[in-house]
Length: 386
Image (cartoon, rainbow, N blue to C red):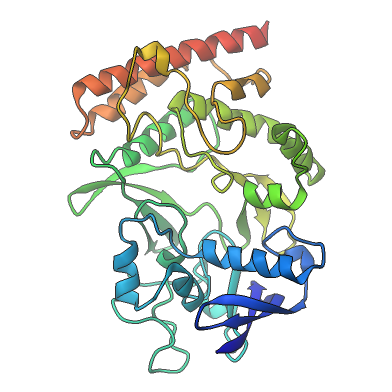
């Protein structure tokens, strides 16, 4: 069956389209209301481009198929796929202010969004459409959270709290998040603070939502797709684009991320886990998003092979994959403190020791590698400072 759907930004209609509710594929574009508010990059006027990008956007709105609880979530919600789940739950999330619904329903942002309204735990019954008209009891931010780790949003008085488990048997990712937070705190790097908690006898990381009813996170992927020239240096281009949009200090923030990814050996810095914070009303770019998502680090899922010196470098996903090579881009950061970086190794060692699933031998190796990385980083900084 074909239904008319509308994608909105808060209460503002952005684009209306025809959706096949059997396959959940966008089949045609009805009208573009505000092109500047589209959550994807195409502005060339070709309908096929808008259809493809809108389908891609809806696909990414649902939970990842790589999540351990993917099949269970589909089962308890009676959804056939992540895309079904995305559409059923109106695409609502706690990252930005976009959402979608059938035009036959007169839903209001103020009544449904997760920034201003409470939400309950995941309800183990089928989600909308239900036996009751306008039943939205099963709309929940858990249905649209990105990434492959099991994650859960909880409502805590005024805060929205994200809980993340680890993926691997040693459950190292939550410990890494807490470690990275402590390192960034002593280095005075703006970041989302992750704390280590025990829930149901399992260690998890918890953090507060970094945006609210007036702000939203815009990914670097969106920035790359909308304004990047693929033939130019992506690092320099990203900085230029951000500066054009009023973010004068973006290079410093990008350098902080490069330094942290090198120290931690982050293998998961892709274009959807860094970006900018935007005013959700005026669309003004406000500041670089605080650093987050550092769990896939410190050899969390791999065996350390060769000497510790051989493991100084690591590889991530956004551009020029070597984390060591990215150090070539940065200029000397005035905040860099050669005394404080000496504390990094101790923080990593103490943080990993809390995890009883990691052998003492592996912890010792990771600590030595971290020490070598800090020494190498200090060398780079001294050359830049000379």
